[in-house]
Length: 277
Image 1 (spheres, one colour):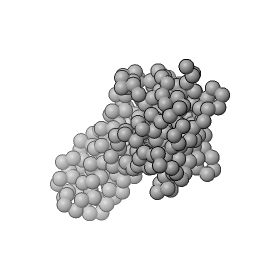
Image 2 (image 1 turned 180 degrees about the vertical axis):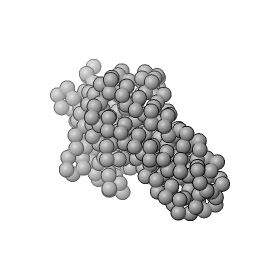
Image 3 (image 1 turned 45 degrees about the vertical axis):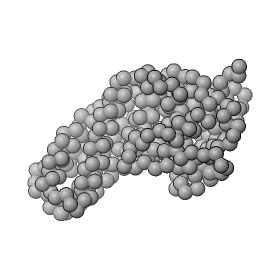
Image 4 (image 1 turned 90 degrees about the vertical axis):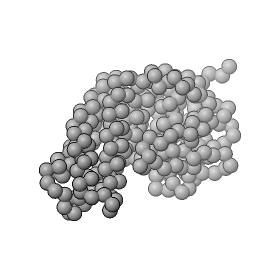
């Protein structure tokens, strides 16, 4: 896996993604403070103004990021919908935080703020995972990568969103190492993680199994529950929201990878097969 690959992503997208990541981290911190009985109103009033001030710039940066992505043909309808969702949650959060900075916070107001923050955290976590996938998709370079390497890298990837990170056991067959695909490596690693999340949704305790087979000039990677066999890795899966699956499918298509889902929750990734030597 090429360590220098991240340098070729669109710098504007990466910068805007960093703004969203910082704000999501701050909102996570506020959620923890609101949920702690040891933290009083005075302590909250010291952190709320900074988070309130970051909401509008973050919404603008996210809109700019998604408009830039659409201009680069990295998606369409679902990229626009993600921008609307992120802006809506940030606007709701800003309005509630503005009220909290103007008046002494009573218990009922704290509970209302906590509910708004929890709702924002859920959707912004999911939005951040999609934005980071989009940033990786902006790197167009592709190289041959063993399918087994994609699994190993998925298992070793650090958590992007610690507050909602979870791991799913992914098993695979021995012969997957004999297959190589031509892909953007970092994007493909994230795609395997998303596919594991889609397949394991609502049944994570059973894990998922990956199988791969050559089909002409393509490689079909199928991920489906349950996990089976001795070869496996604990794969970090991203937090999901309603937009996750159509968004990932749309953006992956722009990178030349087809994503399809079946009723039994299996997910297939169809990638170009690397030429044999």
